[in-house]
Image (tube, rainbow, N blue to C red; front, side, top):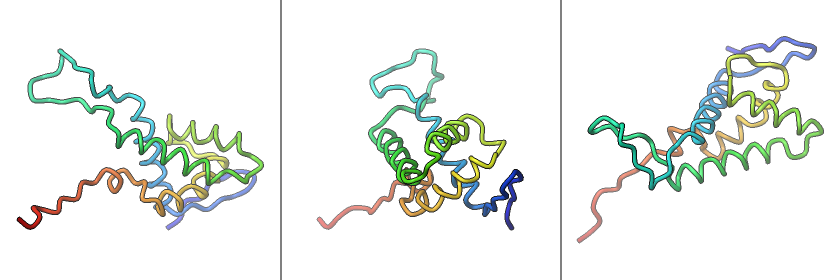
Length: 131
């Protein structure tokens, strides 16, 4: 099943590309609202912790930025694609031709570099080592 973006030039998107880029853009956008690790809040309910800025979240922002940069580096419409990335972070409900082009370019790179939030932030526990 494919989605079609209408416009002067029709671009076909595979649903996994759209889902992947939306999730990465949402997570990337949410990173700017994380509290610093040293911050404390008095208003939090007991037992409820708000997400904190960690080295992993910083690495994620840098990795996503580099992936987008690498995907659009040799294109002539770099400024339009950068603007499309900003629009996708803020509101991914409307997809124009420029956003569709960006999604088609960055989705394979996001998948190759495993930038899906559920993979990137997964903690794999190996148990105890030999004693």
